[in-house]
Length: 381
View 1 (tube, rainbow, N blue to C red):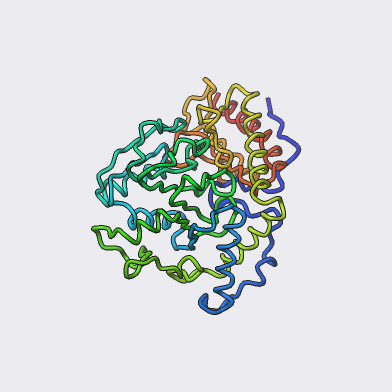
View 2 (cartoon, rainbow, N blue to C red):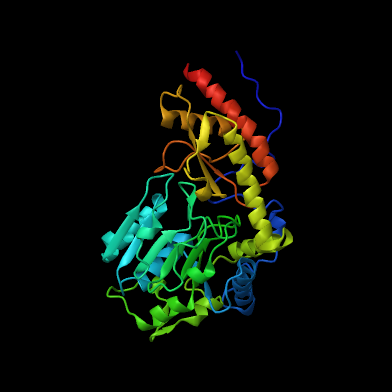
């Protein structure tokens, strides 16, 4: 029997977890003020870069004494700069419950060869932070982009910690409430919650992190692109928009436009509300179906940005093939693009629910997800 397709379609089928959907009001005309063909060191370039830094500070509520820098190579570049420049003064605590956190473990243990305690959990779970020694330097992701599992808050970090906390917050910044007083290094990329263009990362340093930089020299050589100090002092220019390498002024303009939009929708609280509404629509859908569930076991740790789902129907013969077939069917229909689970994650789907996605599009997509599920069940019968 033919399965009837839903009548309503999402206006925007882009649910990729990175690069993510552009802001709903985006058009190329909004980038007309980009100083293309100009040096980023010219006054106009410096002004744009400084505006990107200060608008970020304003919207995220970053303390005035924290340094904010624009760095190359997206969030990955920012995390690597932090680890290579700051780690090694004391042992490290490496915390991972998904693929990107696992990547930082590999870099520290196998590349930097630092003494480290490694704490891991399976996809859908989170580590026991009571076993993490915060007298050491701690590296962790705030939101596990590929598992859909996040820390619920910053209460697990002691205020009197001796070590530094280095937090990869790329799929959390602008959507989840970061505990700035508990975080010494925070990194993210524009291409996530703000739907910006790729290749640029943000590196945010607390006074404690700056103190470490100015009083500790790693045992290993640092490539020029990683150097944050000169003559034992922080290179302040990096945190005023005088970037280490040449940034794309078109991407900078795009980020500025997205930040202006964030203010229009209510600032940080408005962004939180949009992401929460999107994620809740998916959670509610799963609660009323017995064939799909959230990968995150504990509701308190469920991500409101990268929502990861698993199929639970006993009729499914090959979980990986089935999930790929559902994602492919939705893409072919033009309903949901790029929602397959990350390659290292368990078979399933990953739907981006960040603030640039419209809840109406989530609500229009979900009946199609049920349609695709039923169609694939029938096809394998």
